[in-house]
Length: 331
Image: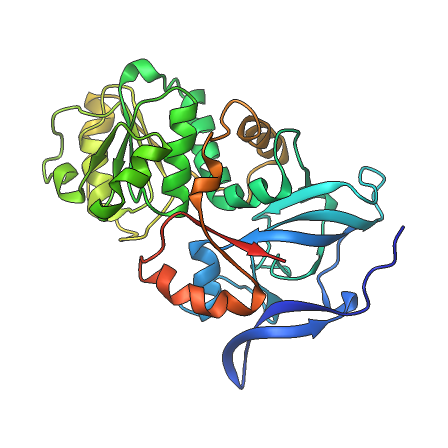
C-alpha cells in the first residue's frame, strides 16, 4: 500500500473558548477520526447542512473540532479491511461525516469501511459528488415512494424548492425514471433551467398555495424541500393513495395540517432521512442513480466549482437561498 501523506489541508471547524470558527488547517492522519480505510479525496459538494455547520448557523456538529463536509469521493490509498484495496474508487455521504466524525472537506479522509460505498459502474467520482447527498436524498425519496406503490399513472410529481440541490436533482431523477414532473420555485427566472432538467411545468409558490385542509387533487405525489405551509398545501392537493416525501425545511420545520388527506384520500407522508440509511438500501439507491435513474443532463446541475479556500464565501449565499443547482468542491 502507498504510504499515507504526512500532512494535508482540511477545512476544520472549532467551537471553544475562542468562539465558533472555521478555516483551512494542515493536519496529519493521526488528527482524523478512526476508520479502516484512508482515501485520497477527489471531490465533495456543498449542501445546506454544510453551510449551517461551516457558519455555526445550525447545530450540526456534535463534537469539536471536526473537519466539515458531509460528502466525499476518492480513491483508497490504505485499507485495513480486505473488502477494499488500494486504488478502489469509493464514495460516502452522511453516515456521521461532519457531525460525529471528520468529514469530506479534506485532501485525505479516513472512513469507516461499513459506510464506504464502492463507486458503481456508470458513475465517475465527479458525477457521484454532483449527485452527493442531494442526489442520494432525491433517489431515496423515489425509492421509498415506489415501495409505497407510487406509479406515473397516479399523476405528476410536484417538487418544491426545485432550483436547490435536492430539488434540481429530483426534477432530473424523477423525470428520468418516467414521471411527469411539475417544478415549484420562487425563482421564475430559472424556468428554462428547470425545463432543461425535465420539468414539464414550472409553477410559482403562490400557484400551489392553499389554506384548505383538502383541495382539488392535482398531483400524483410530491417531494417537498420546504416544509411549513408548502408541505401542508402539497398534502391537500395529492391524489388518492399518492405519496408526499418530506426531506427539507428551507422555509419552516412546522406543519399545520389536518388528517383529512390521510383518512379520506389515503395519502402517505414519507419521511426521508438520508444520513443514516441502511447500507443495503444505500447501495441499491446508488446503483439506480448510476443506471436507470441517472440524469441525462447531470453536468448542467453543477452550476459552480470551488476549492477548499473558497468554501467560506459560498456558505452565506446558500443559507440566504441564493444558490441554484449543485456546487462541486474540487479537492
